Image (cartoon, rainbow, N blue to C red):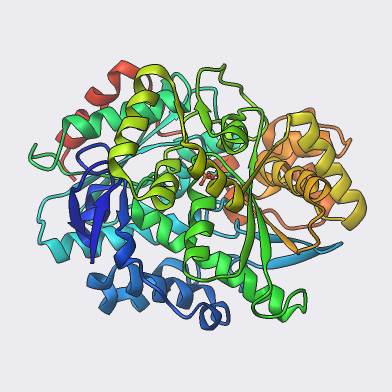
Length: 488
Ligand SMILES: *Cc1c(COP(=O)(O)O)cnc(C)c1O
């Protein structure tokens, strides 16, 4: 199946698109609309998560279809700490939480990053590439660890992760710098997530397919990450049918804690495949560039970058938005222009008709740290459920959406991290003592909730810090080249 770039007519087969990550023209790979795969959505909603993922692989990456079942099994079976993989929990009042954090690193990124190494290895074989692939990743906290864990010691691959020093939680940092494996490298950069991401993109532009250096990406710009993320929308919908919240065919709204727009875009793709989705509620924290964009059609990144209690959503340039605009417009020439405006001036304006179409599908809402903390406390008071600060932003957004639209449809709030990854702000929101080191706080939160601490977090305390580099953003390229020189 052919994928095309959002910015020019460049095309690639699905294994090639997975290997490249980003198209050489700087655009993102999308299935051309005429090729958009369709599956019977209702049948998908009745399956278990690995089966759904397997069906999605076969549909979107048909060249890899013979391996789809075994890849999905190896990615998920025995690696998640809940037999339902992404269980949906009722909170009452037609509100549900779909927990996406039961993977090895306790963040929703595990759903995609447990699979991506298998997709990359299979793509490498399919295309007939002998040399090692170096996976470059910029992280706002959760991608880095999930990618390190996914790629650790996968033959023929090497992974390099950059995180903003001081821009991730202490637990997230510890998770990354203690990573074991022979093929892994981690560095903090002096800058924010957008600096890390644009540094990675610049390295990609310099080392194209003909440079002799084989790079790929584990960021959500890789189409190989987007496709498995569609799975839990189908699964959540099926769970709501099973729980009697809807009848098959009724619409469900989803509230999604959003940063790079990958998670919510997967919901849009599921909708394109026929899943009865009402609105996708795009929940932003104080970095509210998407909120403004959805309300006005103007994307304006010229604003201060704010560090919040939901660091995985501290993003001013949401890469996957480009794909959403492509799906709405199918106009690569326009997109190239918009993205040039963004790069040169920091702002672009979506045409009015497209803005209206976007608003019919997406609803933008935002929460300050205080509003998210209030939503967290309120949810706990009403239902006894303890959410993490990212999920709390979406809980607040769901409330704003209901109040403004008076919709009575069920809302599934996607829970993107375990509260134990962010114990300090969670305890503070609950009015508990939030003083002490991160590990003390995890113990205190566990006593409060009675929910066991995920194994990967419980074992962190005694691990050795192995990756201590902190570099300037200008040094990222050299850092990558040094890793490539090391033999695997
Ligand atoms: C990555 C992440 C998000 C944002 O997801 P996007 O796909 O980048 O929009 C939200 N919450 C958590 C906990 C994350 O790790």
